[in-house]
Length: 357
Length: 245
Image (cartoon, rainbow over all chains, first blue to last red; front, side, top):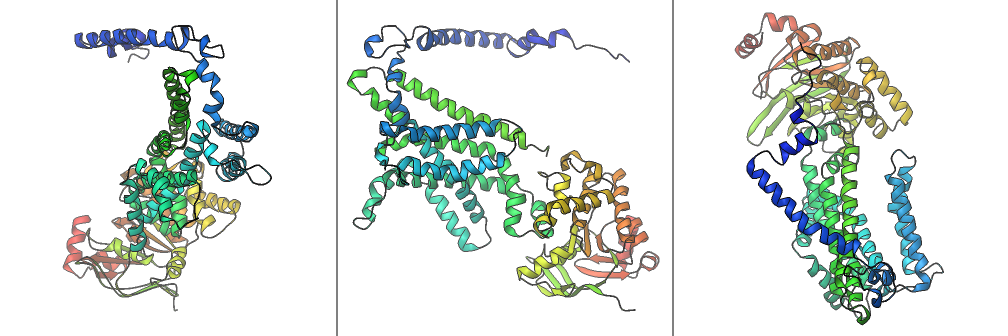
């Protein structure tokens, strides 16, 4: 028997890979060449517009003399883009929240650290409460009306509230829909189907314009709050169906083994069924979160200036007319960073939770 | 000498839709008794033992387990499930938990044992089924025979007074059947009350106090092993035995 036989050279290494994947037949060769040509057409001009020919320093539009992008526009409006119209003297409150959020997330992303559970509880349980007081005031802090909230800050508030609250609500709705109690099941189903049947734009319109009509005179609550509730239930209805898919993928044996061991319904769900079914649907859950994050841009139509909205808004400033390309590219890049981050996190989570079954 | 009655089923009936899966079942199991239930597929043997811990609901008749009657009252069901351990054909280990966590989960959450104590107990029973060296692996990393032994250890960790086995070796490769049967024989010798649905007639001969033959939802024959194999009365039992022996 030949023990030390090496693989044929043609199939290994870069050349082997190129040959096998890009130049295997004459038509694949043609497709590869056409593809390369398009890359050549698009990438170099794009790179020179964004980096090589771009203007990075300066303070006014007079400094924008190069042929590429003028990032001075973004730089000069950075405060609006990140904080909206939040009062300048109170920006430290948002900065504290940004800081706590960043530190907690970095902590959670570093592998093998202790007390991650506590950091998680802090992030999901205590941090939001701190944020409520920091952002809107109270406990000696000056009140800041939500109509002044905007920019990336507002986007993160809406997406954060939506993500953190819609998952538990979605799980409860999914369990409710599969419940043996007919009333619970019916109510959950009706709730899910109504919210899923309506476009988010309609939900926001209802929350912003119609809802006050139904309330008694003098009773009113914050427009942002109404939008948040709308986004939250909208997302929860979608998540409920995602989670239900995971629940349905569970073999009956898992229920039976839990019951035979004497676990009650909630313990069975919490310890055995949900951990497994949520694991199955992690990609779909993160997909929903990404969609929610991007859908927050729709709040513009009810007069809230989120990240994208404020970029459009500063683009209409007479001092900066004609720089909307830079604005949109910047917005796209930031959205992409957040969404790609979530997507990578989803893959990491899947790998980490994989137990080989 | 009167024996303590562990399970008593009287005139138990059950239907799946129109299908009469259990037809007038009367069965008394005393402490330490080992009962093997056999019969063709669809005869209701699995359904019978699944009624004992309420994985299936019976519709008529009465089932009393250790003095507690099985009713729709959740408390009676929970009490009985705490006393009765079950081993399934497909093992049904929890794939997201290590073998050790599989075994200590119910003692911690149902019996409210402290974590350390529950883990010690789990290791004790894993040692007994000889897979204590696999305690930190996940179910998918174990062979079928090892998984089934882990499932037995998991059930034993609740220190049940009765053990139900639903075709515990049917899903196993032939070379792994013996390691599982050996564990079950050891358990039987320790005096556990056992109801075993199986086609392993060698096991039945060796440990059973009584063999029950079921067909079409009825108990057709109920005898000690010697009589069961030597003088089966009913034609159906004879046909069945001729097919599997």
